[in-house]
Amino acid sequence: MSCRPGHAALALGLATSLAAGALRAEADGPDFYAVRDVARNDVLNIRVEPSASARKIGEIPPDGSCIRNLGCKGGLTFEEFTNLSPEEKVLRASENPRWCKVEYRGVTGWVAGRYLSEGDCRR
Image (cartoon, rainbow, N blue to C red; front, side):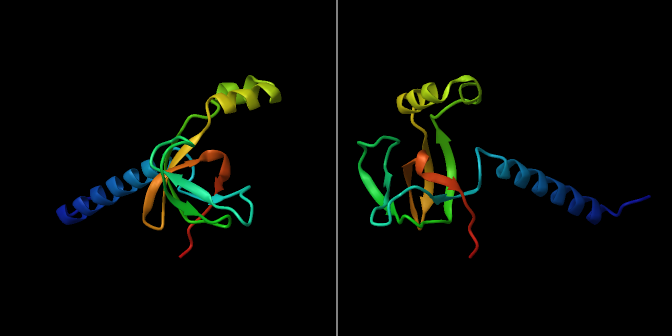
């Protein structure tokens, strides 16, 4: 089977685009989050750094969704999650809390990962 030069370039471009998209989709968890376990009269604070004492730069309502995942750090490793007792997991999570960098309605910053669950962004 022969392929015309234009078709080969198109096929190569499509394959490259698909591969790049697959890499992005697999990066550090879901593409989007939703807020969980925040009281109805409270908000999830967005901070400039991954720390509860860092300056607040925004907030997400308790029913917030469409929160773009930009990567997380901290939290339990797979080995810790698999091997530690429930009590040890709680202690380790408090020693090394999970923080996630997110973008929500134009504000980019860090939120406590324990208040996030996998979500979507249907616009």
